[in-house]
Amino acid sequence: MKFSKPAYPTVYFSEEIWVKCPKCSEPALVKTELPKYTIPFPTGHKSVCNCKSCGFQDSENDKWSGYVQGFINRACGNCGSGISHTTEPTRKPYELSELTCGVCKTKREYEIQWFQYRNDKATDPYFGFDLWLQTSIKDNVLWLYNIDHLDYLKEYVEAKLREDDGRHKYSMITNLPQWVKSSKNRDVIVKKLNKLKHEFEKKTVHNTVYN
Image (cartoon, rainbow, N blue to C red; front, side, top):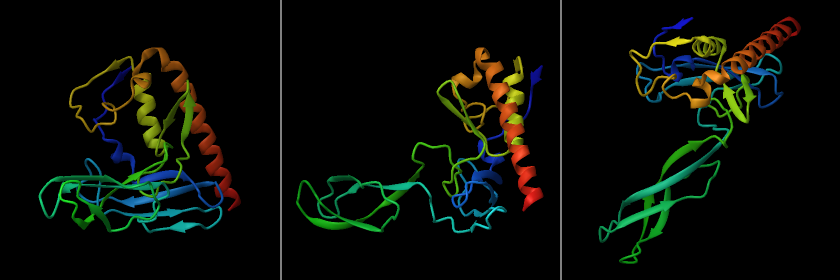
């Protein structure tokens, strides 16, 4: 079997992501309108999360479910010496922090640059909700955004001949961990992916019928 699909980046599959509803823990769908430019990560996107089971809805991308951490790396506004500062992890970012220069001892407020983190969990990149499609394989977590994402990975893992033409640093295949690419894990990964797909489809069909 040969794998010769295009070198899609992971963000290619991120327009529809299945997550665990933060309210009822049933499957919820995060839909995102991606902008024209999406690599390495889209900005200015619009996302909404809907759960048919309990009616939960969220459409504010600033409500990050993980945590944020801020950094200041710049020159002192008085003497020009380097100033470096890292904030404590928090859920609520703020704009400024007062720092004292270690050289001239001048106190000034500096703007903070914030970054989002995911609490070491498999989460969606827009709200930080736990992904529904995830499974454990030999102490590792394998996660997917949706069934198209799952099928793409499954076809790659099943393939005994894999063409690398056109791969780039942002392609999903390029960034897969070695344990996923290893042929010795092929059977167990395919088995787990088939089981995950079956359980997901059974769950979503059940929710469609009864909701």
